[in-house]
Every structure is written in structure tokens, then in C-alpha cells.
Length: 107
Image (tube, rainbow, N blue to C red; front, side, top):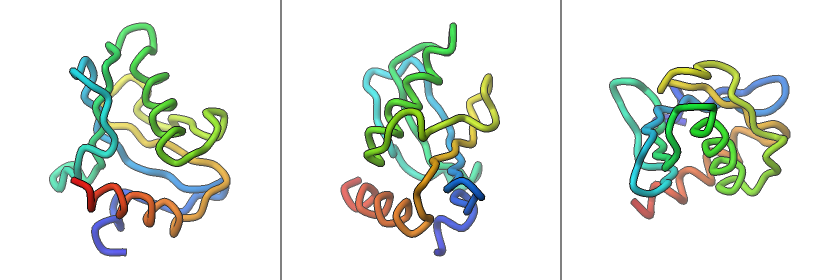
């Protein structure tokens, strides 16, 4: 796997991805890039971190990116922090890596 070893993990229900979130961005972007110090994929969202707005936008953005229902995405750690781990249910590690590699080639 290489680059993705530290950020993507198989989970009994699907796959987890480690994210670093920038709220209040000018536009929503995923993936922004790979933060090698934090070992997380960066995501920018327009919403503020108040009233769970940023978390809802993260879930929607990830669902859209991986073409999944929002019900298949959940934040399993870091709910009130910039460093979060999300779970994507019913997907394989290989499919997540393939989709991310396609996105990173465009960066």
C-alpha cells in the first residue's frame, strides 16, 4: 500500500480513513493532500465547527466522493477535533485506495 499504510485501515464493517479537517474554508475540497507529519488525508469544508455543521459536511463530502449513502459514513473518533477517523461501511480497502489514487493523480 505504501503511502496509505498509516491512514487507511480495514475495519470489520468496512474501512477507516484518518483525516485532518480545515473548517471555514473558501470551498469544500477532498482530498486536499496528504499530511505526512500527521499521517492524515486533508479535507477542507466550508462549514464552521459549531453545531456539528463541519462534521455533517465531512460526511456528505466523503459520501459523495466514494459514491456511498451518507448512512454508510460515520465519524468514529475526533468528533470535536480537527484530527478525525471516519468509517466507510461496506467498502473494501482496495476500492478506497483506488479512488484516492485517482483523486491524487489530479492534484
